[in-house]
Length: 271
Ligand code: 2HA
Ligand code: ZN
Image (cartoon, rainbow, N blue to C red; front, top):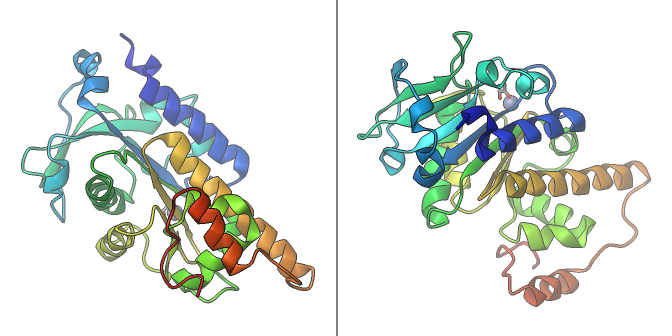
């Protein structure tokens, strides 16, 4: 079995192309990690080797033994599909959760994304809060969400309400709201820990003036969340440019909408 033809590899290359087409993946902007289940990995174990082992600055015991397909540092999204063996790698978190070993990929001497200190704690949190369902963490420079972070207060409840009001899908897809963080140093331990804390409650986290993190059980779910939030942000920017809202979906209507789908919107947003 050719690992380059595996479902997890084609998921990764397909979404990388989409991200580039959206204009969210300029140069080396953005990064993705996908947890590969033992069942999926089984058929490809013969493709793995034992590469370098790297200590983690913060251990992730929740992920001990897990495999992740991760974009490389400096990798351009536009090139991932054409050069998967160079652009991507698989890392295995070791049994104590304190280090990882590269077991496939980064063929030209690359290494995992500089945002790994955010991706691994993010997976640890989402795996826990979703009872093991969440498998994808996607960071991208979604244009409209970033633009919005310059004009709205950096407040989770305000930004969530504004996006929910823009289109009916939003409260249904992210009833827990979108977590908002102020600008912090990319790649740092601090932004990783703060993001993981936000992901306890939200599947979407906005990094002001930088980009968005989306988590989901599949690549399509994580991408779909970001795509929906970014479209709502785009409409909001247009509405603002057109002179501002004259009317919108009312709080009571949003509550009723969520309730139709059996969902509970984040507390305090619709009051
Ligand atoms: O990989 O997106 O946040 C480049 C980045 C850093
Ligand atoms: Zn980024």
